[in-house]
Amino acid sequence: MQSAVDVAIVGAGPAGCATALSLRTHSPALSIGLIEQASYETARPGEVLPGIARGTLESLGIWEAFEHERWRPVYAVASAWGAPVLRENHAIYSWPGHGWHLDRARFDGFLAKQAEARGVAVLTGVRVEGAARTECGWHIEISAGAPIHARFIVDATGRTASIVRRFGALPVSLDPLVGFSRFFPADEDSEPRTLIEAAADGWWYTAALTGNRRVATFMTDPDIARQYRLDRESSWREALEQTRFIRCAVPARPACGEMVRPAGSAYLEQPAGDGWIAAGDAACAHDPLSGQGIARSLRSGILASYAISDFLRSGSASSIERYRRLIQHGWSGYLAARRRYYLEEQRWPERSFWRRRHASADN
Ligand SMILES: Cc1cc2nc3c(=O)[nH]c(=O)nc-3n(C[C@H](O)[C@H](O)[C@H](O)COP(=O)(O)OP(=O)(O)OC[C@H]3O[C@@H](n4cnc5c(N)ncnc54)[C@H](O)[C@@H]3O)c2cc1C
Image (tube, rainbow, N blue to C red; front, side, top):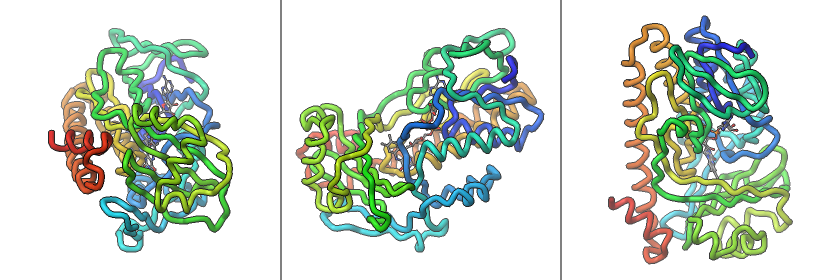
């Protein structure tokens, strides 16, 4: 990568890659550096991409390449929420059509390759260690190689918002939800639907993955997870056995992998400022119940790219202000939906997990 670029994007997940791809389309004269600490070898959270993302992939110019990757389709989501019965939501009844089971590491690697093929300089396996304001941009320290200078910096580092928090923009967390996932080898004909099930102390989901694997996740609060000892596979299994539907879809074999991830709702009060923008989860992180994290992150990358192009062309802060308003507007809509969903489940009002959700909805 050149030591000076117009735009440095930190984090090559969906938000960072979408920002880069969209900038290449709308402002091809800008030089872009995309810096990613990982090498896309390990599992990442976020396995189901809803059909609504198709329009976004089309506007990024990568729909055909995405289709060519042959992701496994998801035709239905079935949830036991508010009552002990499975209610199905079939893709055929929604206009965007079916969604896809992703292997997130492969999907993120695919996005980064698409960006690289369009002339974005991609650095993987390199961590951004710090970013300091200079008179005409940013001085960016990286874990390997010479520092990079950029006129504009994008924080697309996910929930950690690890760049902007260095200059004081701290995410405000609404809840401490955490996901305990385990992965299993699965048969090709295993449950094809994504299943969601509310439980007394949280909620579960399971989905098939590409490569004949399955993920099952228990979403709960950290203190409840400690009581259950969810870090142990045997205790996690005991909790699974208390479910009615999820347990039937999870193979009775030992797990071949596990992952613990924060999954609560969090937002930045200031998602953009002078010469910087936060995109994707770094700006607003959603509860996975929404099933929209990846699609929203891709869209926020596109919005960020418009704001950055205008800002670098005109020097006016109005595009940055508009971006802030759009992000805040989207966040308000999300909060209303989150409130509605958690209030729909009233079977365990005395249990801490639900009491906390209902109290925060009332506030
Ligand atoms: C348990 C769980 C299940 C989920 N399930 C779904 C789902 O089924 N469907 C869905 O749509 N969403 C789901 N989500 C949400 C989804 O994972 C996120 O919304 C999405 O990944 C956000 O994309 P992003 O690009 O903003 O951030 P991320 O995907 O987190 O990408 C950030 C990138 O920045 C890199 N990075 C971080 N710091 C640095 C640094 N200092 N230097 C260089 N690189 C850095 C990271 O390595 C990473 O690649 C789930 C989330 C959780 C926690």
